[in-house]
Amino acid sequence: MAALNAISHHFAPFSLYPNYHSPLIFASKSNQDSVCCLAIRSVTYSSTKRLSSHSFPRGFKIQSAATKPAKSPAEEDWKTKRELLLKKRVRSVDVKEALRLQKENNFVILDVRPEAEFKEAHPPGAINVQIYRLIKEWTAWDIARRAAFAFFGIFAGTEENPEFLQIVDSKFGKDAKIIVACSAGGTMKPSQNLPEGQQSRSLIAAYLLVLNGYTNVFHLEGGLSAWFKEGLPAASEE
Image 1 (cartoon, rainbow, N blue to C red):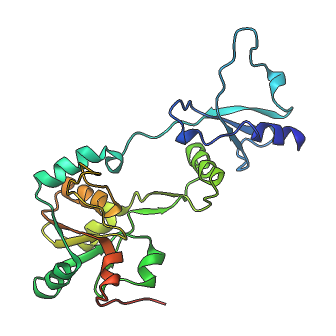
Image 2: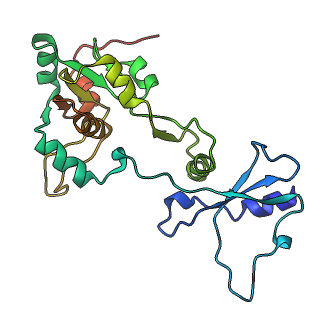
């Protein structure tokens, strides 16, 4: 146990560091498929202090290296996303206009918040497809990410929902009239402090939608926090 503690002290949230190197994953020799494994940052050793088998506890060996998956479209730079949103003429609407469009023009509000937030309160008729979800996988990279979140006291780390577009496609046609909404909303409007606006979950979702052929995508300016603040209709699920 002391040896395990010694290894754990070398750990740091390497996914948050610019000089991150692939971490090393250690597993017990007696059980190659053991779920219990440790992730540590790779460390550079000088020629006078080489890494040897004696550096690790007996019964442990290097099994594999965790590598960060390729960047997904949702992880593109905000500047890239914003340029496409503007090119595709994705329009931002305030909450009162969104309500009018929903009532008079058959627009549907796509709520991309986590399911728990949606169930607590949402616009009547809104459809929930969360763009981020709790981390579910247990690959070496996911374990590293969980540990990085935990380092900062966040024990419910999230990841991009890989089924987001698939679920949206099952609910909407490409020409559906959609208003994408999240909590804060974000903005594409430039300001003195934010010359390129500010990214949000709903704007990321809107980017993914237009990137995949949706032609009538709007964005809720101010987000659902503004919707509820204005006292507009709200529903909940118990």
